[in-house]
Image 1: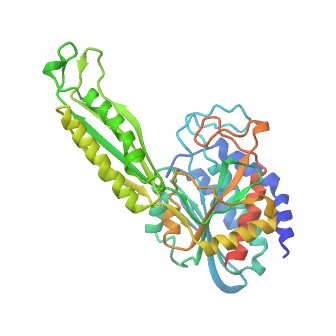
Image 2: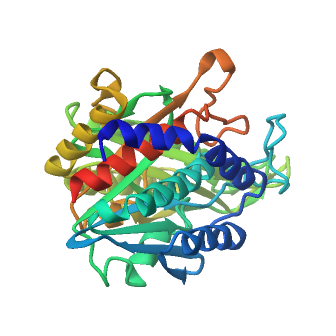
Image 3: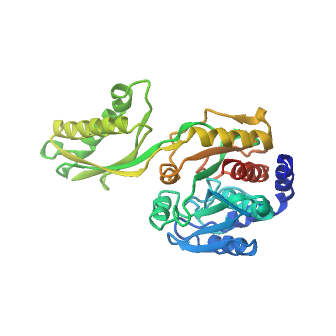
Length: 391
């Protein structure tokens, strides 16, 4: 099977890929509720001759295909869940599930995954080993990947290589970015209650105002990265919510703050959390209030293996051309595929999907997010070539 055959075969699937993608887009499902999507995927995999396991971590699906010879196991992962976003696109494939939308491209990921499954079944006699296709639920903050790991997805058989890709509207359609090292940041969720003493809005001297204290905490937190993290390192501290009080003339008892921390380096993460705790507790105390920081670790950083990256880049260059294969794409966004790549050598890469002249360049998680569907056959070609060339 020549490399150009992979691209041609992937292009021949374009109509089916678009149909799959649009069907998934019309019927989005939230994390760990992807029952319809999982059912379609399982049925398609069975029809292609895969050994199929369902209900892995609630709604996950795993398809296993043994090649003609014994050899390495290559796992490719595709996420399935949608977001609680009210879609604003006016297309004939807009979401029919009010308030739920595929606003991050996971509809495209599922379509690409089924396209890869189709080609790998077609190439089965040329497959030197085993391909393990993992359709993962709950990527959007529901810990789907660690749940799948706990359910044994990295065993029976254990993969030698893991691949994952993301449709990416920060890159033009046709571009493939394959970068060594860290590409997605570790993510933490933090919460904090600033405890004061409520009172009358006209008599603040008789109260301890948690709104004032919390406001100074928000300001103080802006110095954590700018003054406590080396300019050569990377970190983000964001305050995402500020909730306190419900009456114009009442000082509330407390204010609740929450937000996120993003880092690549574990030592930087530790320094950020320690400094945040100092700012929160001491600024609150300076205002006569008290506060306590709680941090929940959501996902580690996605770190790509250099050797797997080299092979994926070579495969991508062979099917789409070296001129559109880039490197250097890194983001402070997070991905729970990190739970796979920290256990198995892997590569997580980006499939450019933006087409500004068509208005297909809204950012991820935006109610107008959409992408150029030319990314679908390109993604199938690259991932299929990578599976064949990284084993």
